Image (cartoon, rainbow, N blue to C red; front, top):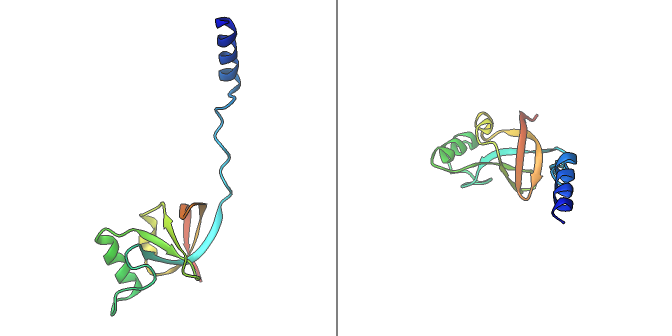
Length: 109
C-alpha cells in the first residue's frame, strides 16, 4: 500500500497536478479621480483636491480611486497615485472585492 501511495505522490509532483496557480482574472480599466480614504470625494473646504489628498495621505490616509458614480476602490499601489492626487485618471488592473491590484495609472482627459 505504501508503494501505491508513493507512486501516486510521485505522479502528482511530476505532472504538477494541483500545483498550478488559478488563472488571473483579466485586467480592466477603471476611470475616476485619485482621492484619499479619509475625505473620499469631499475635500477640506478651501483646499484643492490635490492639496487635500496629499495632506491626508501624509497624515496616514490611503490613496483611493473614486469613480464618476461615487464608488470608491482601494488601490494596491500607494506610490504611483501621488503624482495624480486629485486628478482624473485611468487605472488598469484586476478587481477583487473593492481593491484594484494596479498595473498602471495614466492621466485621463
